[in-house]
Amino acid sequence: MRGQKTLKLIGLLAGLGLFVLLIEETGPGTIVARISEVGAGFLVLILIFGVRHILRTIAWYHAIEPEERQVRFWDLFGMRLVGEAVTDLTFLGPLLGETVKGVTLSRRISAEHSASSLVIENLAYSFAAGLVIASGLVLLVSEFALPGSVRTAGFVVLVALFLIASSIGLIFKKRYKVVGKVLDGMKRLKIGWGNKLEAKRDRVDRFEEIVHDFCRRHKVESALILLLEITAILTGVIEAYIILSLTVHRSSFLAAFIIEAANRVVNLFFSFVPMRVGVDEGGTALVVKAVGYSASEGVSLAIIRKIRTLFWVAVGLLLAARYSVPLKGRSENGASPVAVSK
Image (cartoon, rainbow, N blue to C red; front, side, top):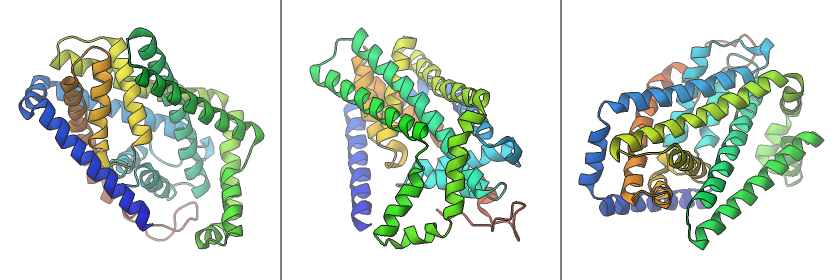
């Protein structure tokens, strides 16, 4: 555990160091000038990011079994904002953020359906992100002259995506109960945490059954969820296009699409770095330079995105008290209330 904390701290410090270095290389004055050029456009960027949250909330809502949708849409939206704020601000990233969402929702519906809805929504999002990343890499390699090392890195990412997608497909085809297998392994190794979960094995098995059966029983909603996730990601393309248009005064949807694909890669591999400090700016600078802009324009773009993210993080933190205070007594589904702690 200490080793993990040390690695995460090293990652954050490295990110901060990279962030400072990139700021110095770009020039604070240049970044301030880019930010000022956006001006009232920040309202548009904040709105677009809000639409992204709404689209993913709709997808989450439809990932809940119809008979279990005992939650109002705007409450679900609030839970998402709180969870995303935790994801952005902590070392544990999605691990803690998704847990916050799941625990909060489990006060309204059964814990099994709460957990399964999150898994289904995140699997659909991951599949959508994989499609965008793969498409972006193909476009980057085919449309732009790149160094051999960059082409090799792109190929490695494509192979990794294929292997991950194939593994997930095999799990669903064979109906493997992955969590159950993990619990069996932890039990054999006599890991205490595993023994605690083993006591709730029936609920764990039920959760996995719900996930495996969802796509088979709800084909139309499954397709809708995937479409919503793809649309949510494409809002990032529109956002990148607007930022480049306002700051550089020249843009293209091809470049914006590739930039968003690269942003998905950064979010995938560096989710443990709070706010992706440094790595987001560095990754964006590299990709933006590859598609015909200067590295400084990439750094400015990433920082502008961080500003609009901070707005929604602030909203999530303001809503935290509403969705983290335990309910009195027991919820309607009979689950004991659990306080969310960061």
